[in-house]
Length: 113
Ligand SMILES: [Zn+2]
Image (cartoon, rainbow, N blue to C red; front, side, top):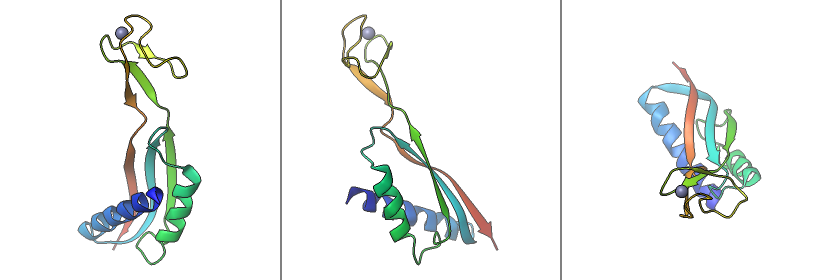
């Protein structure tokens, strides 16, 4: 499942960071997930609960922020509202996604020995 590989990549990255800073525990992870990143929030959360066992994140809370997708005109930059046809109301050019497809590890709260 897609969410499992995302979580495994996330945990590997946190373990690398933790080793680099000699952390002995991780208390909290904050991630940002875009609305159109293709991530199911409950699958992401349950994948985390399964995969964190035995890792440095075993006791770490996972905070997930969902980021609304935003679209804008490719040509003139005008905001294109979601739900409308995804093309510019002024010039008719196709819209491009400005934000909303990202998965970002924002913050790690670690305990340093
Ligand atoms: Zn336009």
